[in-house]
Image (cartoon, rainbow, N blue to C red; front, side, top):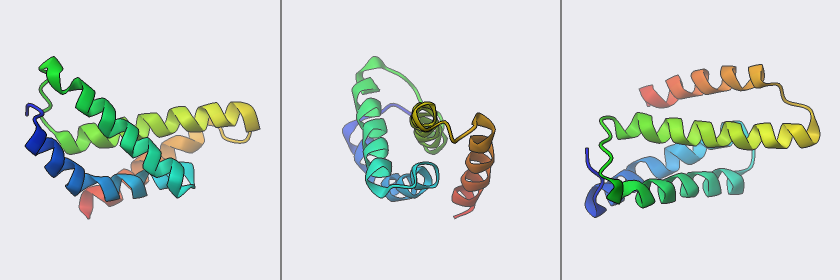
Length: 102
């Protein structure tokens, strides 16, 4: 699917809140979760003119948010030294399945 203004708006309305809840599982802070999701949508908007085709926007957005959250948690764990990369995998697959069925 090509990204245009109407599909972007529709996808934002449909996925913003569920993606924030998904990010919250990683980040444990609603403000950071919302910022992360907004950043992902902003990046998607910036890429719209590249002609990129996305076959499954929902999966693409969840992957984008998950990867961004993992980057944030890794950065924070370097500072706090309290989260291991293996801790992140259990969260990602369990909560992604929950969001896919909802």
